[in-house]
Structures are given as structure tokens and as C-alpha cells.
Image 1 (cartoon, rainbow, N blue to C red):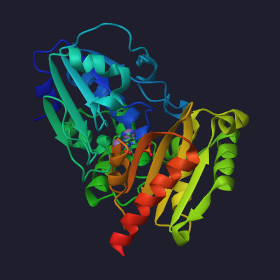
Image 2 (cartoon, rainbow, N blue to C red):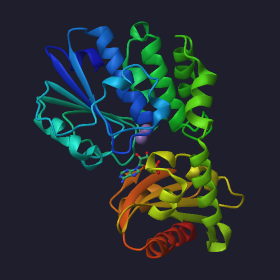
Image 3 (cartoon, rainbow, N blue to C red):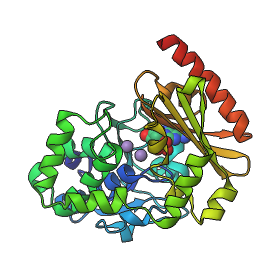
Length: 318
Ligand code: AMP
Ligand code: MN
Ligand code: MN
């Protein structure tokens, strides 16, 4: 089924993404918004997302996103994008529950399909890639293409992660042909860091330790570290990737304090280990090589539990 069919007969649509929106989440939500405005101008479209990184604010429609999920409203169609389960929608789940028809477009292997219509493609690099496949190419304009291109760039780590397929490059190429400024998007939204972002990266690298004979690297930053560097949780993208490329490392773990006694955990695997299994055992989810969860307790104790699980996985693989 194509996007146009999902909004047939509808006069309003909501678009939702996951909590702590990343590039793919913001890109796919705003890309779908732009596309819907092109193919069905009479449709009222509202995007609901938590506040997201300033680098993404140049995208068309970023200023029309509502960070307020309190409003009681019912939409004819509700899209949930880049979101592996209902909980990841946060309080915006109310718009899913109140909608007449729900559609989930995603690429997480752990997604069990929580909407009326589910398009889940774990082999796709990103939700933006899945959406591009669902759109009529001639109706994708530059604004839509920029959003989807940004989403693909971010979830593939600039076309370098193993989720980058031949198809990913073909789709990215078709988006480029719409007039996307590739190097600007890559430099301005992926590589450029504020001074404060560099400081928290340095802090995380200094705190890093090797475990399991150097096959696991782990680092944790506390709420105090975040305050000292003057950053929020929106400034931590890229830290886990820097940990992962450490020589000899198979699995990288990065924790940051998200609230009192609560830590957000990011997991990355280079080759052997399925980190989505570990994330799932903590109630999280994700992909084979990139997954996450939230865990309660002391940082050291959470790391011990993860280390034990990783040790089991590594033993099975070797
Ligand atoms: P992150 O480490 O936050 O960049 O997340 C890596 C991958 O795991 C992303 O695809 C996320 O969507 C997914 N993920 C992260 N945290 C969670 C969670 N608490 N529950 C389910 N999936 C998650
Ligand atoms: Mn995401
Ligand atoms: Mn994604």
C-alpha cells in the first residue's frame, strides 16, 4: 500500500516519532509531512515531537512541530515513525490511541507491529529509506528529499554502517537529484560539534574503560558531567560511535544519567554480538548492531549486568 491510500478520505493526520528524536526520526516525520502537503494539500497535518537538536531546525516544517502532547485531539490517521514500540512514543501515544486509523513505518527488528497498518523493514537503513520507497518519486520535492536524505545520513553514520545497502545508495542518489546539498547536510548536521559537545565527548572518552580482555568498552557520564560541560541529552550523539571504533573492541556501551537513578543505555556491536537481545532483556530494543534501553540503579551495577550478558554472548559466538 502507498502513502496516498492511507490518507484516502481523511481530513487530518498526526505524525509521531520516538522520544529523544534522532536524525532519522526528525527526517522521516518532517519528510512525510512535506510529502503529504504536496500530494494532499487539503489534509491538515500535525507533527508531534519532543524538542530536538538545533542542527535539524533548518528542515522545512521544523518550526511547525508541536512539543506539547497535552492537547486533546483526535485525528483521522496517525503515523508512528521510527518507533519500535508504543512506549517509545512517550505521551504522544494518546494521538495514536485516539486516531481512527493508525500506520506504523519503521525499520527496527524488535518492532512487533502495534498499528492497524505496519510497514516494518529491518533490512532498510532507516525509516527515511522505507518512506522514500513508499513515495511516488515524481512527487518528492527538494524539501521532502532534504528531510529523508538527512535521516539516511544519520542512521547510516554517513553511509558507513553495515545497514548501508546498494538500495540505500540508489535511494540517496535519487534524493540528491532533487537538489539536496549533501556536503552541507553531512557537515552541518552530523560532523559539526559545539565546544560543549566536544567537551562531553572528551569527558566520556576519559571515563571509558575496557572490559572482557578489551572486547568491551564502556563509559558513563553523570548528570553532574552534563551540567559541568553545559550540555543536555541532545548533545550526546556520536559518543557511542567514537567508543565503537576503538581497536579490538567488539561491543561498546555508553550510559548517561537521564534522571535520578535512571540511565539511558546505548549499545553498539561491530560484528559478532546481537546487542538488540541485550537491550530487549532490559525492556529496550533496536537493531542487531545498534540498540538501546533505559535501566535503573547505580551506573556501576548496570554496567556489571550488561558486562555479564555480553560475556555470555561473546562466549557463544567464539
Ligand atoms: P541509541 O543508542 O539511543 O542511538 O539507539 C540505538 C537504537 O536502539 C535506535 O535504533 C533506537 O531506536 C533503539 N533504542 C534505543 N533506546 C531504546 C529503547 N529504550 N527501547 C527501544 N529501542 C530503543
Ligand atoms: Mn531513531
Ligand atoms: Mn531509525
